[in-house]
Length: 443
Image: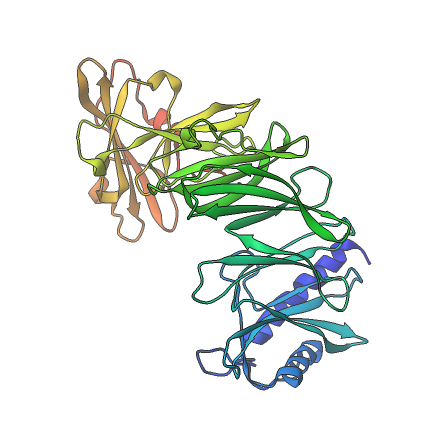
């Protein structure tokens, strides 16, 4: 059976299973604790329900991942490569003194759904579930991240689900992690980010499958001021796989670490060892990495505060330089001013640098652009931008403005209020430089 057809069958069964479990023929009791109720027959899917209830009765509660792409208590995939989908379920036992976390594998044998295995995990909650083919056999392994209620520690376990009983390949602590082919060998590897708040240290470790287990082959130090991770982007740098980690530092601002693999060793090229930091990418707005210029590559937003003619921090805006990491350096690909609420941006030509200032206006997430030079300071206002709620927008209230674009949520407008000797402002130029998308959606 072809891989595309197998994938289609798995996706179809996932959709039907979700509709049965959460639809009119409810698999849940009416209580808020989501205890499983008696099954309702529905072909093969009814068989899955019967198998679960036959094995577990009613004294358990479903467990849902808190983040990631797999947030259902049930995940349907071909775990063993036989062309037929299996299902895994996470649940907790409710008649025990302590909350037990279990992972159950359900298989279809000759049209009948049966429990293949039931494994007890050491935690109480599921944090995230990811998949990746780590041993190159064409079947994805499962990375199950879990936690214990009341404990700040999070851990993950990697399972090979190709046999009747799940085989544990790795178990350890993590702060965040990524399943991605970082060395280009067409197998997924595990990259684990770890923060040690006591020792004030941070690192990334690289795990590769070898001889039935995952082995750590490399570790690299990263900025020790990291307090939490906002996002990890899978992309490339200089044509090779790379990870871009958007993280918060201890002052609450975002910055980015780049992680690459060179000669089998992890490298963090933006990490300054002498300063023990990567604050070259620190920004004052909560912008994450993305493809800002539409070239298919990830750019890192780096910002500097623009002249605003005021000491009020709420009025300040930044010049954001979207930089691509290539050939060991950061190269500017685009410059823009992003609105305070991160709803839109206005692209800035290099010739504008040093010739304008900006003031943020709280009403309608506005930006006022002013003429500026370093000697005489602020001049007159040149033009304005704003984003108005579509439901409350009235053309009469914005008679002197023109619409740049609109959707069901917002109407984006501009108004030319003056001119500058250096900056030739026109409606056409504003329309060309404005964008309601900060980065391309596929990034």
